[in-house]
Length: 212
Image (cartoon, rainbow, N blue to C red; front, side, top):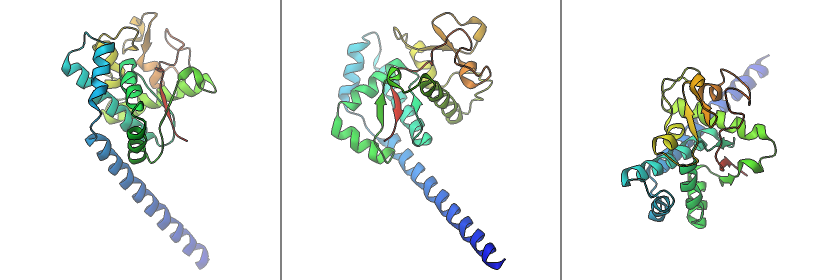
């Protein structure tokens, strides 16, 4: 009996230390992501693709990319779909700096973050789960109730806000969603299926994050 109690205490100690170290690494990586400065070329490419954007709006896209990386940090090795076309462009341009991107990934996530096209997923449900993961983590970071949202998180609002052509537009009002829109509460789980609302797509942009 004493040996069993000792084992339980020892195991509890290991679990506590593991969680402590994991939390410390999470915070350290969060600070690294927040303080990271992206290559200026990324902004130039955003301007070229979307010439209607102002300087402040391009900066908002770059902040959106950091926000996506924060979600990936929180998600660990789980897939996190990219909810925005314009932020996805910024991510893709960052990847072209191959050496810098690899170094960034190692410090930000402890692994390489792949850019996986949604259509290349093994099954459609992977992208669907990824967008739900992005939604819930975004809501957690912005203190939004994912089941009954009163506003859209930045990554789910930015394409519509910046009037991105062929972007992903989300709405809080499911009844008013048109054929090209995505219903936020469906993603949040109140409906629960890939065919909920007015759109059967996952709402995932071309890129979804995944590890080795």
